[in-house]
Image 1 (spheres, rainbow, N blue to C red):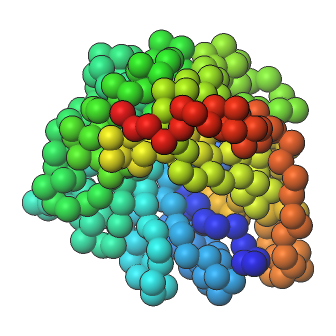
Image 2 (spheres, rainbow, N blue to C red):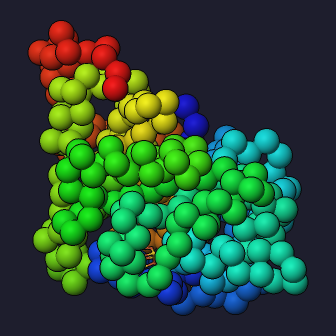
Length: 327
Ligand code: SF4
């Protein structure tokens, strides 16, 4: 078993040009971007530790990381020092990817520097609704066409919410939209649910706009789609994930609860914009890379959430006759 979480997150910045009401950034740590040299040194030190303990997946995130494209390029340059990384992807709202710097789009520049994939946040197939959720003008079709043209693979990521994708019909239309635009796969998630944290506006929005994913998954199964993979208990995170294939497109559904993770279980490893390494989104502890508990195997965690598919086996056996059929 690896001693580290499956992925290392590198948070470039906390600023964003969008104004999503549910933004997790407003609810968790929001440090200022630290001095460039110290931040990049922290990225390298964290990578040394993570890679040295078997970690091979890196997620670049923000805020909106493409507001600091030079910083992202420098991170990617550091990552080239670590061979055979299985995944280097970046979450983005896509609004800056077509901007040009010295004759190349930001997307081209990041591809050239080693970015392997883009996780494009798009919350609705209807552009008016998508813009309303983001609070800025987005252009998923043009961005997707450009990524396709330059050969940079991309995933579509959508958060289910009231006023956005609310039911299975919306989800299926979204999958068609992603497929038509050339996405490699689709990732649907619930609005994060927060437990035991001080109530802040973002948490209230996450509650009031919450659309549960479980009934959608169940309806999908009843329609004859078969789950082809599940993951749970990620390094102590209360996270469930289930995978389907819809019309040849890999589609993931995920639910995540924030608030009960314990830093000593290493649920995450996140290099923050100020260069601090954290292992939860809410506790104040900072992980020293030489901490003794980093040398221990994380304990096997029981997942108390049990909301999405802990009873999936039971559910599937009750619906056996309907399984196997594909749309
Ligand atoms: S795009 Fe992401 S970082 Fe920006 S406001 Fe929306 S949720 Fe927050």
